[in-house]
Image (cartoon, rainbow, N blue to C red; front, side, top):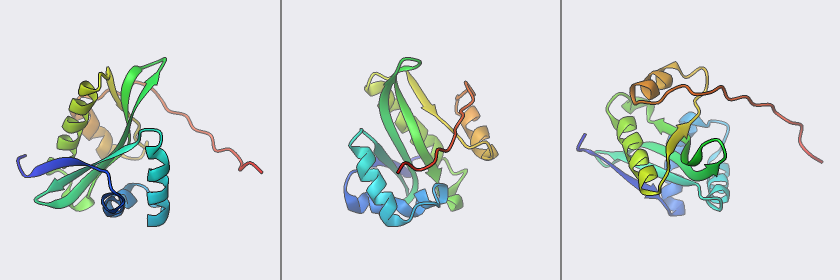
Length: 146
């Protein structure tokens, strides 16, 4: 798709512009919490990819390059969302292609992500894009520390 371009959101203004899309995926965060959290995560290498379709911000993906005993050097996609009004137009596929190329350029052996169990359309998309369901992800909420 020629009318989709990708770039990294590096300034606070660019990060802030990603919030309306990220809110579709992470509605528990208000805009100031989102910006604060992104800035905090950037200290550990977190980056945000922004995808523009016809100059309109249409998708965002948050990712980090990491090292794990189980996976070696890898890219982990924390967040990936295409605007609900622009799904099935190729934006998500273009973002995944960009992420894969970036991972390869950084010497990563894997591109990994988790997806909520209720996101059936996303699962279908990831499988179509060559991902496999390789594990179950377990989580346990802990009480706040005093």
